[in-house]
Length: 287
Ligand SMILES: O=C(O)CCC(=O)C(=O)O
Image 1 (tube, rainbow, N blue to C red):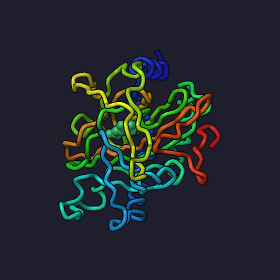
Image 2: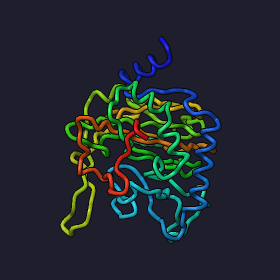
Image 3: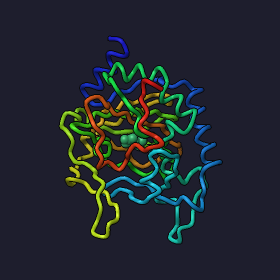
């Protein structure tokens, strides 16, 4: 069995697959260096104080809701003290940068629209894929928060069905100590458990609501997926996955983006993330 056959088989059976050495060392270093440049040039410590966490609530402030076509900065909840003062330096305080790195940053764009990504997505069977969002997730030592169990399609829904994959790239070794991904293998066969929808409350403010309460999962259902720096993980939009806090002294930075199969499907207008006039979702194959 060649490597690609094994990847496709794992993806089909488990809902995720690991591809070692997908990025070269040079590509990894280029992305990390671009991230440092974005922090140095773009992070305004006085202005952009939006915290990002996952779970049974979702951010609805304008800074988050309008970030789909921008590069914006989201903090770890433990980055601030009770008085709202930053307690760590600018390289340690962020949870993630999102959600248009794939379009607004040349180094991230080059990886996202690289031939090897296009080949992989073709092999998985996507005909008209578009890139809908991207993120750099830091998970810094001592502060990097957990990502609660979820299916990506909960956030990235489509009609009649959300055919979505995530490509996730380790920019350092991801281990069980620093919060590698953990999956419930085969859970992508169970369909969508719930969906986040954008709606308004009695006061007319935008809120995000789950259509159904999230199922509870047991730790023993999850299988850890430690990977070496440079590895890619392909994630089916229906597979349940999570990651723990970073308990180590090693950072666990990753780059990830999500791809939606547009053929025969319409993006759900209830999703928080919407294509904009300035930035329609870019086609993977035509860019
Ligand atoms: O990188 C992580 O810890 C989690 C990422 C994730 O769950 C996702 O991108 O869907």
